[in-house]
Length: 161
Image (cartoon, rainbow, N blue to C red; front, side, top):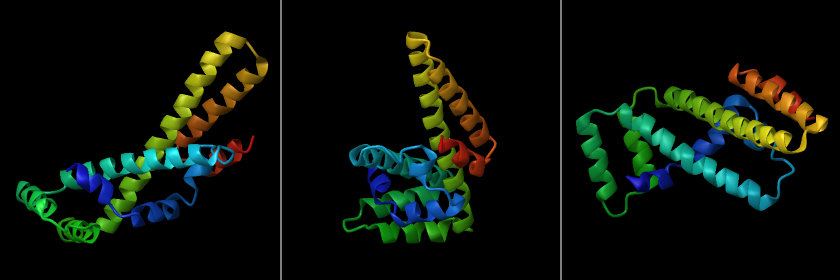
């Protein structure tokens, strides 16, 4: 099953940007990161997204469908088009399901990044007792709260600080 995590189509990632209309790089505040750091984050995101979608899609299949999927993946020459076709046949309203799951994943991923940033700032604040770090921490706490409430326009505004 590891194979499917790799072959879920890149088209899914293109759809993702249309869903919330906010770019992942902007939402995690990575516009000024080095290119290799951005690429590493996108790669991490892509792998995690593949696993997440696979688990969500597989949960919607019957035991017989899961066996059929295993057989499909065991065949030589199975490509992403065959996997996408399989899910299209087996999951009613897959476009709606995909949109919902992408929103959920993107929110989970982005809020985890924010939580990590908050923890990092808390550690720095304990070490340095700096008012600038304290102010930045408060901003990130507000960003996280807004993200958890799906107030993405305000998140983007605060990310411009």
